[in-house]
Amino acid sequence: MLEGKVVGVVSSKGGAGKTVFVANLAFAMSSVFGRRILAVDGNLEAPNLGLCFNLPHPPLTLRDALEDKIPIEEAIYQLNEKMDLILGYLMNEATSRKAKLGEKIQFLLKKYDFILIDSCTGVDEDVMKASDELLVITEPDRLSVTTVYKLIKAARENELKIRVILNKVRGSKGELEKSAVEATLAQPVASVIPYDPRVIEAVNKGVSVLQLSPNSPASKSYKKLAADLLGEELREGIIEKTSKALKKLKIKAPSEEEVEIRVEVGSDEILAKKKVIETALNRLFEYYERGLILEDVYKDLKRKYLEELEQLDSQAQR
Ligand SMILES: Nc1ncnc2c1ncn2[C@@H]1O[C@H](COP(=O)(O)OP(=O)(O)OP(=O)(O)O)[C@@H](O)[C@H]1O
Ligand SMILES: [Mg+2]
Image 1 (cartoon, rainbow, N blue to C red):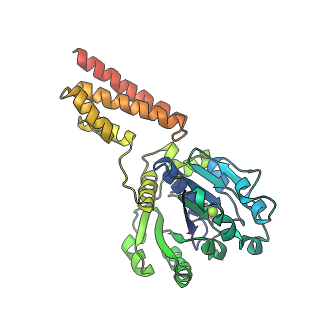
Image 2: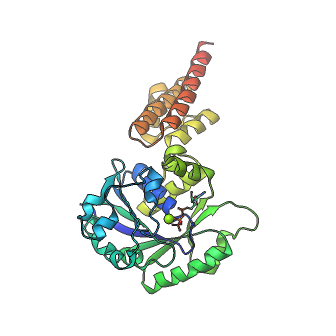
């Protein structure tokens, strides 16, 4: 039986990226590492986690559970085989009812490895009380970092473990550097998520950026953080491996398959590369069928890989 950890995602300034972060981190933890993850929309003042997955009007929500109209289990929406959501609905008198959040969530801990909770901007005491640990989101500018300090102080007073996430980093001149953020907050930065237009595009399509662009800069950061939180090692994905393999003319496929390929084809470079691509094609199809990448992405990569195969065939005939 699982015994999940509850992680609240908080920030002091609006628009720092909490909601989108919860959506993508939960997707990375579940789709890449196969863990059971629940993402909860705890921002009942502006609930919009559902929009990140094209679910703007959930029939049953956290609000119904907090108002004791339904058991919390009935508010669970299954997004895919490993990831569930509990979405929100605007609740004006959120303050008093939301105090029950922690108590309600306790019923679900046995079903999940991690429960991620999105929160209201500022010191969201109910989310903080419900959490075992906090991920504190800040942008790399002085106003964000200074205001987030208040939140960190409150977390320290509550003896909550915190990890700071630096979000929307452009690497541009004038931005606060990671070391400056660490010095101001007296806290290491656990993860840097780059500013990535693909994140915005994915939100507009109602999917995770990992489905739209698995190797975009932000996707890579979400995967890396997911690995750190789960104590896993992040291995290169099949798409990344295949493109590198083709570039370098070296065989690099996922571990077990790599061994099999080497044994099977020995030093025949063309045959080996064909095997790598065929393996990638099979894996891609599996990902697509499981809803882990979008149809467009799947079709595009499939077309590229088939073209590569054709080229290799014509090379072999020469
Ligand atoms: N890494 C990123 N790269 C580019 N855009 C991002 C990134 N992370 C978040 N965004 C964008 O920033 C905007 C605000 O994000 P989001 O709504 O998640 O913030 P929030 O902290 O939840 O805001 P609120 O205070 O309203 O709850 C969105 O348009 C989102 O797409
Ligand atoms: Mg939000």
